[in-house]
Length: 357
Image (cartoon, rainbow, N blue to C red; front, side, top):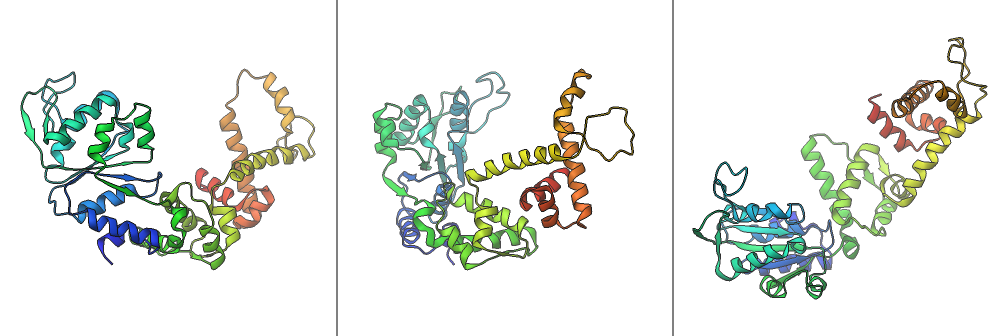
């Protein structure tokens, strides 16, 4: 397995084409822009370009969307002591840190216009000046950018400089969405499971049956490869060393809008069950041996006699009492306890973990 295969997992036509592009573009020092949806692995492509290049310096990453506008210039170009309030010592910026290496500007579409102008100058003369300094620093840095936005549309809206786009877009590289290379999903799953086993030193790997793999291959994957990683995390918690069917995938692993509805329904079910209990009213000083629980509607009259209530703690305590009772009744069997509480098994597991029960 090559280093590129470790970064870009899969043998679909789209994955193979992407790997060929990396091999072709990597030796060049010219800029490149990596296009693709969020979570598709654009940073991995940038890392592969650097590792396959002849550059001996570091691979430095900057997320243009995560740095406040007022701090970005100092972050990129560095600054001298006393250049601004808080600059108690000189500091090299990301460009200098990437000397003889690669600077990866992620989410380049979010770079402020004034920084776009300064980046264009760097591309034209390979020289930077730290904030608060007049001394020029000569650079030997390859610049690779990435974006999930339509840069052409940003140019039309005057939000991105057209001349900067021309300078950066020497090598445009398109990263396909996972939905466009669904045949790679089984291999990607194996990859993440292997990584998890190596990291934890434990083998709690579930087995994805053919129906499960088919369900995953037909899923739309809005979160792309990043979402696969999350699903594997979920699978190893919910199905340690177990078999996963297509029904399990749709019910427990895939995050859909129905999950939100189910959580709301589960909460309503708890209150409905309390309503159905044979209770009369809350007796604040009633017999402690009484087995009659309060009805939810009776909390209103109780609240009238109290100045305030810690609602979050009260609901938490109610949940804990019912969960512990259900688990004790069923000798720790979460499936049966979940049935008694009218919860999904996975929801009960999450609550048990949350409360440390």
